Every structure is written in structure tokens, then in C-alpha cells.
Amino acid sequence: MTDEDSAPSGGDEIRHHMSGSVSWITINRPEVGNAIGPRHRARVIELLGHANASPGIRAVVITGAGDAFCTGADLRAPLPSPVLDPPKGAPERPAGATMRSLRTGAQRMIDAVLNCEKPVLAAVNGTAAGIGAHLAFASDLVIATEEARFIEVFVRRGILPDSGGLWLLPRLVGLQRAKELVFFGDAVSARDAERLGLVNRVVATGELEGAALAWAQRLAEGPTTAIGLAKSLLNRSFESPWEVALRDEAAAVEINKGTRDAVEGIVSFRERRPAHFTGW
Image (cartoon, rainbow, N blue to C red; front, side, top):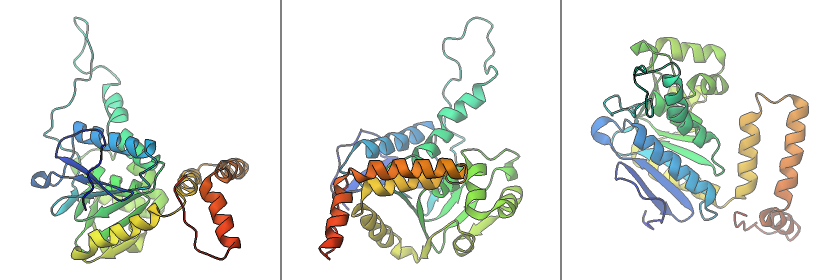
């Protein structure tokens, strides 16, 4: 995989390259289990924003280097100051500082995945814990190696799950299973994760990159706008009343009807040939 892109610059700890129309984001901190800190989250958010703005990017893959996908937040990383220009006598961490930090940090990264206009595939090559698990769960499709495992580690450390996990899990596995995963924090094997609905496919370690690339290329060859609109509707489906869902669906169909891909889909059907989508 080559074809270096012209995306925003960043350090080697979050690697980025293009393979055709597929944007690959690799967390490259194997010495710490690919734990991520504020600047790593910011880089992932930046790259997902770049994918939104670039018509040449039609799918995104997120993976990890080494033997882990992402083992969670890097608790050793220095935290940004919660207060800007504090007046004399102001507390070091005023009320709302933790909430603000979470909203602009971990939650923002998960939100960027959920609201990415291009399909996002997680290629989970090892342990995905804490925010690392939620990064996978927020992705549209998940392929994992047989050695991968998923851990809701928060309660084991006496803290509340964050980064959207309490919203994501019930939608993927149901309320009772979500409670079991959160309350006990047990490691879930790749095969069990597949059975529960957390993972789409499990492959041998040596097959992960090829399997992820095959799916990503299929996504990249599809009607990008239609896939993006479908993703948005599906993500809102649990909250939308029936009437709202139908109205949103009609609006999305109207938007998509004006794309070149929608015209190509109809024409190719009439001509009884495969469709050739451009992504717009």
C-alpha cells in the first residue's frame, strides 16, 4: 500500500496513506498498545474531516500497528490545561472542566467516526479496550483477527465508561448484554464478539489486511453519496419516530436522486450492465 496522500501533516504515531480511493489511518504506538492521547485523537478527527471534504476518498480504514488495535486512552500523556487565562484565585479545575474536556476530546473523535460521510471500516488486529473498543464499535463495519479481543475496561478501574460506549453498546448487542459487558468488564474474544454482533467477520491474522482492503475497495467502488446518506439514516433510526424517519428518508432520496451515481444506477439497470459509480 503506497500512494502517499496530501492530507494534513502529522506525526508518525498516527500514520496515513492512500490506497486508491481508500484512506488508511493506522495508530502507530505499538510500544504502548496503541493507546491514544489528545494529539492522537485530534489527528484522527482531522483525517476524518479530510475524508469528508475530499471527493477522491470513498472509504476509510482504521487499524493499529503491532499486536494491538487500541488499548484505550494514554493516561501518561499530558492533558491540556482545562482553563484559559484563569483570573487570580480561580480553581485549577473549575466546575464543567472534565465535561468540557470529554466533549472536545474522546467524544468528539467517536462522533467524527459516526458522522463521517464516507463508510468507515475498523480492522481490529488485537486488543481493543476502552476508547479503542468504542472506536471499533462506532465504525460501520468491523473485521477482526482471531486474536482480537474487546474489553469494556472502565468499571474495572472504578470509572464510568465514556466516549459514547453506553450509547453504542445497547444498539449493537441489546440492553442486557450491554450491562453484562459494562458491569463485569470481561474480555470478549473475537469469535464471541462476532456472535454478539460487535464484529462482522473474523479472519486469521495474516488475512486481516487483505480482507479489510477487499471490503474497503468494494465500498469505495459503490455509490458514495447513497452509502453516506444510508449510514446517517441508520445511525438515527433508533431515535427517530416513524413519521420523522419517513420524512428524513424522503429528503435523503431527493438529495441522492440528483447525483451522477443515481443516474448511472438506473441507466446501467436498463442497459443490463454493471454500474460504474464515480462517487458523486
